[in-house]
Amino acid sequence: MSTTLMVLIGAAILFIGYVFYGRYLSDSVLKLDPNAPTPAETMNDGIDYVPTPAPVLLGHHFASIAGAGPITGPIAAAGFGWMPVFLWVVLGSVFFGGVHDFTALVASVRHEGKSIGEVVRAHIG
Image (tube, rainbow, N blue to C red; front, top):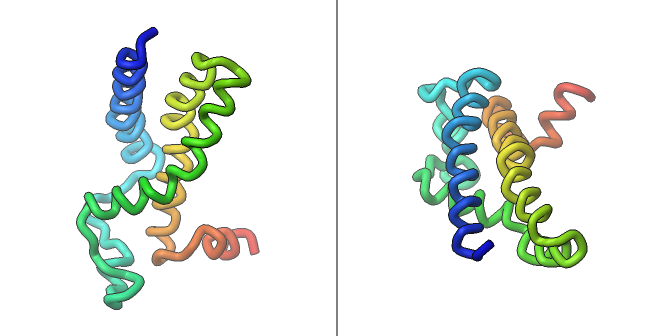
């Protein structure tokens, strides 16, 4: 399989997962309200809580989640072969990584922008 075809297939799966599975999570599971104010709006202090354009937020989020992927991906591919790793990276991003990051973000927003540790402490102790 050519690299171009792999990239196109991966991009298509990620796009479909974003549109359909993301909409399902947003509407059915998390029941998000697009008009609900965020902590950046309700607690704007000009330092930690500042309304920010969506492209800037995407850049910050993407930079923080990229992590060790460029290092561990080739190592895993060397051990298991490229196809299992390709499937794991693409499908794992849609069904595990994306869901984890999305729900963690929603939990933080619903708890006045608190960290996940503080959200857990509030619910578990």
